[in-house]
Length: 243
Image (cartoon, rainbow, N blue to C red; front, side, top):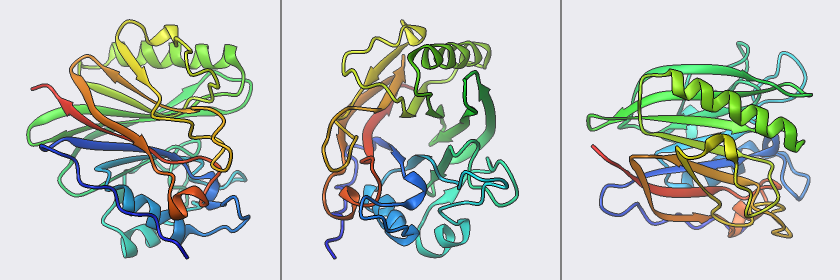
C-alpha cells in the first residue's frame, strides 16, 4: 500500500485550507474505506478541511466518515453541522478543523436547485484574526450553479464583514469560468484538474478568496492513496489573512 506523502507545513505561519469531495469514502478501486480517507486528510496538514459527500445519501444520512473514527485516529474535530443526529454534514458538506482555531458560529444554508443542495459556513478565528469558511457542492446544471452562487453572495453580504474563503466542488468544467455572482468581491482559483482522479479531466474543485486574503501556495494531492480514495483529488491553499 503506497501511503500519501504528507505535505510540508505551511510557511511563515500561513493558514492551510483544503477541500475534498470524498465520494462517501468510496475509492476508484470500488473500496469504501473511511480509514484511508482519514489518512489522506491527515496527510494534507490542513488547518481547515472542507468535505463534500461526507454522508450517505439515504435518510437519516449517516456519516460515511464516522465522527468516532475522526476523534480516535486524527487531530481533527468536525464542526456541529450535522443534518441529523448521525450525519457529519449538511447536504453532505462538512468542515473539520485542527486545534488552534476557535469557533464563533456555524451556519447551514439551503441553496436553490433542481436537486437538494446546501452550503455550510463557519465563523472562526486564529490568533485574534477572524475569518469565515464556506463549504459548497454546487449543482450539475449551469443555471443552478449561478443561482446558488447568487444566493450565497447575498447571504455573505448580509453577514458582519469577515475575510471569507469559499471552498468546494463547484462542478464547473471550464478552467476559465468567470462565476459572475462572486465578482468583484472574490478571486476564484483552481489548483488543478482535480477530477477525475484517474484521468485529470477538469478543475471541478475551486477556492474563492475575498478581499483581505492572499494565497501564497496552492496545489492538489495526487500521490499514493490520495489518487485512489475518491474520484476527486484533494485541493489545498496556504493563505495569509490581513489583520
